[in-house]
Length: 115
Image (cartoon, rainbow, N blue to C red; front, side, top):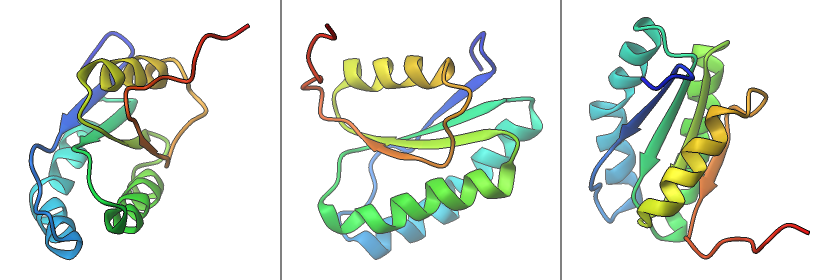
C-alpha cells in the first residue's frame, strides 16, 4: 500500500482466451482485492496485461462490479504492457478520489502535452 492508501495488484499473465482469462482472474485475483480492502486500502488498482478486444467486456465488468462490492473503497482496472504508462496511471488514480469502477487501457503513447 502506498502513502495514498492505494494498493496495486498485478495479475501477471492471463490466458489468451477471454473466457479462460476471466475464469482465472476470478479464481486467482478476486480474493486479493478483498485482502487489500481488509488491510485498509482506500483504493485498489488491478493491473492487467494488454489483451485483445474480446477481453474488454469482462474487464469492464470486473471494474464495475468490484467497485460496487467494495465501496467506499475505490477499485479501478488498468491494462497495458508499458511500465511507464502503468506507473503514470497508478499515480494519477492515487490522487483522483472521484474515480472508481473504471477500466482504463493504456498504450504508453501519451495524450500529448496540455496547453
